[in-house]
Image (tube, rainbow, N blue to C red):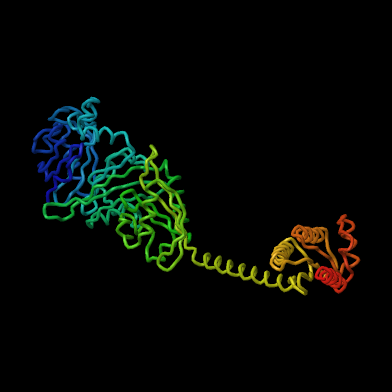
Length: 485
């Protein structure tokens, strides 16, 4: 196993010690201490006893001690050190601080140096971000624990080094679950909340030359200041996934970035299952869907109702815009309205049937009868409303023209009471008939109806009203006979 991979890129001086012999060291150790092969000899003679005591005590667990350096760029400086067992007589040693300048070039780097060096820029940024960086060995031993975000748990950098992560964290904790997965060879990227802290983390396994996982490295960014927004977003997603909808978003290149909603189950899909798929490829068999994508990506927002896989869906499309107003994708909400559409269709059919029946009834109740050549009779029965009056007027005026009628009799025998509106409707019918050159007569007026018409001031010319339909017909026949003679 290539243990030096533990130290790759680490800014802290680290070494692996067998007995008193330094077997392996990282670059920061070499720069700070030099190539000395003896651990004890690396420290001042007056501190040799403290170093040997630490080596003896580290057999049962991590030991922290202070000793002054005898060699290297910080010769004479008192260093805080951590020593922990690595099996048999092997130990890991880390110098916790003060950090030698050679081991922490970013501390003294100028802005120009930071701007030109990826490593120095990353180290400079690392010191200013609330992040935690760690390395955990195959057996669970914490080899590295750094970052300002550790303070959220009341920890100092390096404080957990040498402890076993699989023992200090509960089995059900996010930390333990992630550690087990990564040490099994899986890379993990996730966002989670734990102990009132919210994190975004990325963890990867480290492999030796044989391809075996011997450690994991992880980086976590603290987001607790935004935990409220994250909880709201999580709650919103829970609500969306419980609604009978499909909510989804697509980039301009066709890649799905969001798929949520309970109705996804209609297609055998789980929330998020479409994410990463190319929607142009997935729905290549459905030209209407592709056309809708193109319209939305062209900047159009619209709603359509489409038949899709045996159901009727109402799809509302919207363009996603960046800060400059350019279209970067689309998002849409789809709702299955099959039952609603069927109910609306049934309702329209029923309304059409009712309207047809009403017209049939109007024709039966108020027929236009040609009882004699040039003489039409309209027997009115029941109430006369505006709709019925319009139907009667239209039919009567058409028959007057068609038959060349000279007389049209409105028979009110079947009407007991008329209100103001009904009386006005009858008067309007008579006026329309008169305008066509046909004489309008009224028969069968009852006392109550006559009273209403008088109160309204409706003036029917003399000789146009008759007590019965028979009298009105006799009047028309005499006029027709006289004219014919």
